[in-house]
Figure (cartoon, rainbow, N blue to C red):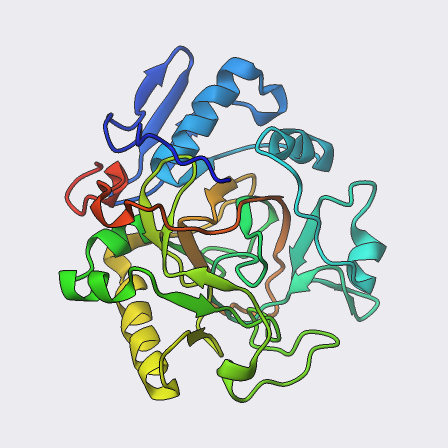
Length: 323
């Protein structure tokens, strides 16, 4: 049985300002905070409480100039929950080192073989592992090598609490109680997964059903949960009705006013909550090297609280100011 939060985040200000030697600086708009004065290699219980609260309050946390080894990343991520291990591929086995919890995200090739996943092409809007019954929770990326400024490879994020809150009432009423079948066959590069069968009609695809309105188990607030766009299907609709509704929801959710684009610097660590965000990456210059290390923990099976329609918004869902 899922225990739903008693809404502490809807009833208190978000964490910001200085807490001891640590400073939490909300980013402009509706999501994100930069944390200064915290070395993740020396994360203790007190500093983790600040980090975790900032993560729930702001959905995304940025820390600059971090010099982490993979073991340091694993130690930080372990505090957030059970690991979501990356898929086993030939390149990941060859280059993952001693920590199977780490995924290499890179366009670099050695002896004409990729050292990591996702390459230099576009990675479409998505939330990680939305095609599983248990979706992803916290995701952390550490920038080891990044292209020069102007070469692309920025990562965009959107606050799905805010996208839900800003929906017209008629559309909110339409999606409460509705579910989406999440396709498992295709990845975020739009490629067919290894061993999967092509799917032309999303009604016939294989994948879990998740509610469109998702209640966060820790904050108690509602967000849109769309997963990713291609080959998904709104259960109970005709195919044309489903496509029209998904088109409308995605056009609404991906508006720039609901998030921001992060321009990476070497040493950046960004960690975010996949349960209430989506993200994408544009294509970038194939000649520019990009090496990121990532780790991720499991989230929960999405659900809508019985009183979801009457729950107050998350503080960072406000479109005016920082909450």
